[in-house]
Image (cartoon, rainbow over all chains, first blue to last red; front, side, top):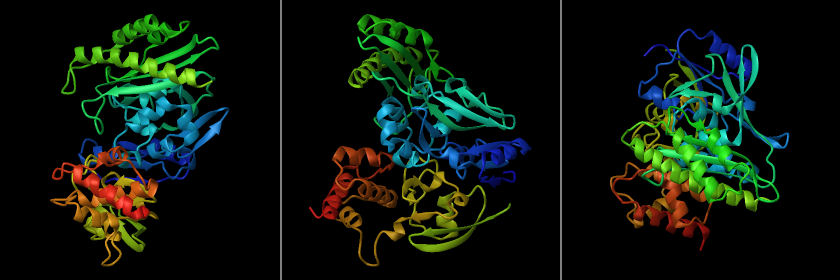
Length: 290
Length: 158
């Protein structure tokens, strides 16, 4: 193993400067539940680890412009325990709750879940459907990037080597909105998604859907926001016919692999089944949220 | 390799240690501080055998670097019994056969302690979900879960 350097800067600019100056492989350390395992199993041998947890703005959860700003390294337990956030974004919480065990959630973050860029990352589809915006900081300044533009392939992101996701903005939520996330796994807990579906929708006073976003996970090289699937619900009362159209669009967007967790055919089939269930769960929440 | 000097509190005792940057908290506890009660199962965060409480949060010691624990308050299995007096969870797990080989036991106890500090009266389902990250290949979990519920009851004074 090459010489490893550990740094824990106290500001984003110092962290960015460290990454920009790294000669070999550098890794950002948030919760470390992926990075430390990858080091332990020698999948990666970084020259530099930049621990961002000493930087206050990457850790907090606060109200902002009627929505929420969530630090990229805020832990899963911290997010699940934030009552106001959990009440507003139950679908995001359903995703975060599935990131490993209680122990893992004591460290793991949404920033890490997104930037590790696993196609099956459970918090990622509900972040896509929530319309979360990642704040990306690099040497040239700050970019505000829709989360669905961050992962590009398994283990790959659109971030430059000296850029860091510092936080996420979750926008203000209209009344009569609801979101939900469900995944399929053979086991109840401690498993990796075979497929997962998140849906976020809003209704008007008459119960007509005014906006809907549908995202699928584990059935393509990255989680995918399926625009056609969301569009199939808009202008409807999210009735069975609209749900069928949405399901067809979600299935059509699947580009899964065959692996030990499921065949292509199975994944596509189950994605549709979940999409239907998740639409009903999101609708029920939207109707209850007056 | 450059070593880092860290100071940390483990079970209320202050320690100084020199750690290599890639050394996990688990290796720091076991090999540097010689606190071998915390067990290594998988070393990849899957089995929970190395569960410890760091600054009030339950986590796997294998998923944290030792250097990150600089200034932290760590609780391990060594701090659970007070002298000869076992913690109610330890007592319950002995009385109700909640262990056989014992490798998972320190992690299970730390996880169960964290659960009961947060929720003194968990249901069986809540207990099973909370302990899902602690693998046990001996007990079949039933006696483990029962032990935790018995201890919870005793600790509530019910």
